[in-house]
Length: 483
Image 1 (tube, helix red, strand yellow):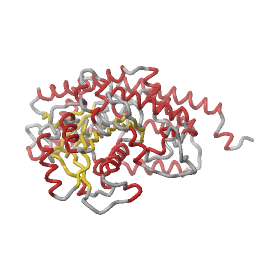
Image 2 (cartoon, rainbow, N blue to C red):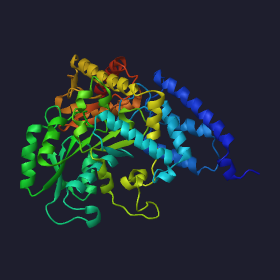
Image 3 (cartoon, rainbow, N blue to C red):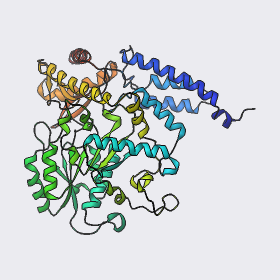
């Protein structure tokens, strides 16, 4: 009799299930890219779906692998559908999904070299490649981590270690001037969260004003610094966006880098989304000055066609990696190493982590680096083309000229009072999601609600976005008729 353990590890069963799954996903991929006749987001109320899966788990009757995966497929959002234009999540290139399968079965945990030798070497190779493409000087180094939030926290921990005036890792927080960081009003929420995790509190965030394009205003940097110092704060760093999450605004990096250098501040750049512009000859100027950052983050799972999660955290001076976490763990980390880089747990918040560099390596070596240039250029061009269309209408309003692949706009039909536009567009979005033909999200700009598109799919075209406007007008008419 075959035991459950033997069944769970049966190579032939795995082969059959693997072939079956890849065949199904390949069919799904082709259908999605052809704009198949299925909802982009098959909306179900959260509690309804939760009850359904709880009942399935509680039911003692078995369910086949094919039926279970099909159920999951039918209930998931379809990122590969060209009319999925919501959040900043990549539709992964298929080869990267195979990398995840390979990595998951090997399960090399990447804490120390011995339990992830190839993965460790691949991670360092990928980081060296990225630093070279950024134009960073010799001595740059970094790590891969699980998302931009952990990446931003790591960069800011380095800022505190290098400019905080003490080794807070070993000595704890000392009394004295409270530490603070200068941050754009448009920065991702993870920056403020990182400062609070670090114990700086809300007072540790010095908000920087933005212009009408929602970029940091360089002329106000010095006044903001003087005001913070007059308020008794020790400013140690400044955070710039390349680009912002809400609207895709790129801060003026050369000016900010010059300011940081003049006043001895650590410069951290959140380039999680927009750092990939460096691969596009047409849009590379948007990240001019990125190589001057003391630390930066770039997500491979946003604009580099990889599945979540894989975030590069790069440091201009790679030796800082030896100082951020001065951890001692004799059961895991040897006291002396000729090559400290080989045990990645020394330099990350994580201990066990996935083989993140493999999907990047496979994409680079099987498809080629040019795929990033084609992709970024297409979706950035599309955002500008769509903005031009919006400006040519009488009933739509563009919030801000797009710099990246993020477009914020709203429907403003004459029949809806100006004071109701925000509420009206929020209801529009709810109805769009219920209909399922498009997926869009919303954001707030200067306290006003706007629809927000992030054009992540390389096969989304202007025709799709023209159809979106028609769908909005149709749904909007229905909404107005109800009132």
